[in-house]
Length: 396
Image (cartoon, rainbow, N blue to C red; front, side, top):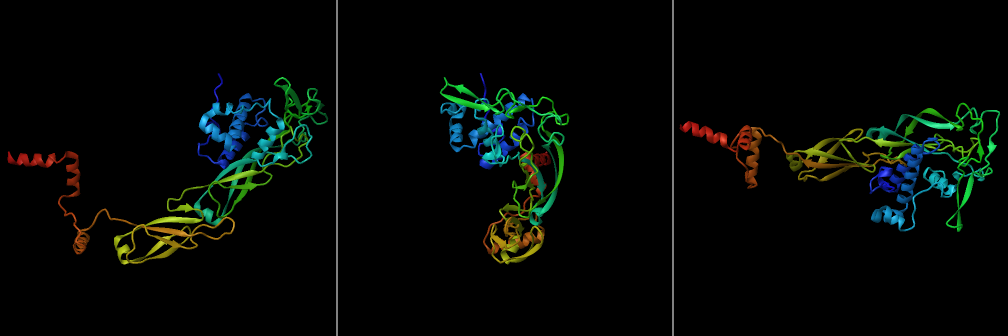
């Protein structure tokens, strides 16, 4: 019996994930397990098919609804079958995959029949910045590995001075057709002999071992614009990978892009709401009752905030233009301040006397000081037995 894993588990996302999260998760896994990057790796190929199947279902709102209600059986009952890369039209596979990576439907072709320019795969990496750097913008060094066209063979995978031979299975077409369901229709798939290239490399390039691509390590300085939000990405054009050898044997075409996803570290002083910053400021009772002028720190400077007399706890004040800049207009948001009453945990004798006198003017009942703090703790722990025992001993 074949056990199919949960599609959400396959992509490593929650059931509340939105479309962008689903796409990002698929892109990351597809880049990791794509056959071009894992030649002759059966496990990687299985993982690639599995994540592609999960993406096809979860990216389709109708299929996702059915799956959420009825699971895999619900999809089978409605004519959906799991991905079988040998029984699907290979151009549909490539177009679906390339749409996810930003290449559009014409990014891939089979057997060299397409005339439009091919596009390679996008890559993704992460950087971390602080909230202060969101205000000013910053730069980061990023390092990553990617494939590039082999300089020795110019991407065709053959030993210099040799030429590939036309595939005898597909006659250079890169795809084969098979009859299905009693000959009612034909299924077109990539040629199993040449894997869609239309030709066979008889003498492989020694540098790339016939793959037409070699791995390189890249170091870049990436500019992070002011106002960027957590999870947004900076696109570095052309720093992705070249088209796969199956669709661009001569190394022509456009390389994909590098997407640098920005993670903004949390700042315990502020809560971010778009371009606005929210801060809770503790204040004393006398400041709320009598009014006061407070020094309040924003992300980059100190501001004076006037608290009028009679202010209530949790009232909201705003300092315009003291928030973060808008990513497009650079106009800064506001600093939103919530004043919150801070009650002292310990009073001096003088403070307590004054507050008791004030309480009398309000006719407010207050507790009198009866026992010390440590006596209260002792009574709580012992249940009052210690004091009773001492009294009993005195009577003896």
